[in-house]
Image (tube, rainbow, N blue to C red; front, top):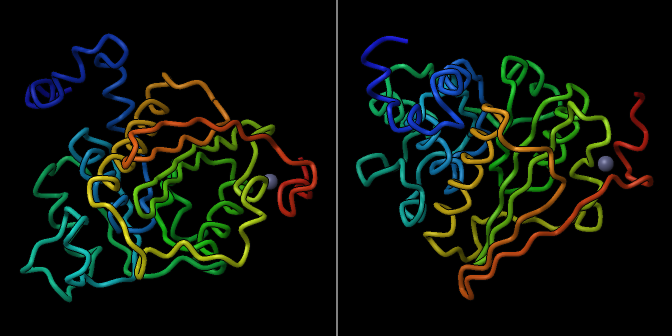
Length: 249
Ligand SMILES: [Zn+2]
């Protein structure tokens, strides 16, 4: 590692759980961030600052005035511009060591393979069930690690699904009942610091995966910022899951 980077990442390297080896793992990682709303913005800032190797940014939206209340990568001068373009520019100005790619598009069944094939870990920061299901099915098939966050009002949640383990539940194992609902935050209320907290949690889960600190735990962590309540819910593979119960091993 170059001297400049030893200094840059010194506060990580001083953590015995990270050290130089861990920082090297972080620096060689390839991450996709799907969705650059509040969660995607805050997670990608910490990932770029931590020196991940590559960040693939995916979003097809442009920046709206109502985004500035919580999407910390964007400023007034960026209104109406593409989110991925501005995010790429700001993340590169934070850390030029990171390879930042921008994809101004929406993930669908026909483009997902091309867009995500180079990424080892996928952060799902999207705002609708349809895209979440497409990303889940892809990560399940490709045995990738999926870290997912969502937030609405005062409450947010996140979970990690490590499909390298064939006993891992998938998103549809536990969210099949919610089919048809939409968690779009475009029109719904959201407490600004909540997305910073959930975004930081998913960046933390991801970095812990990269340094192999985090064991594979099948749980959803739910945070209620109004009451400062923190809840863990166990999730299990569902034998009647419409998706993963049918996947060939
Ligand atoms: Zn499943």
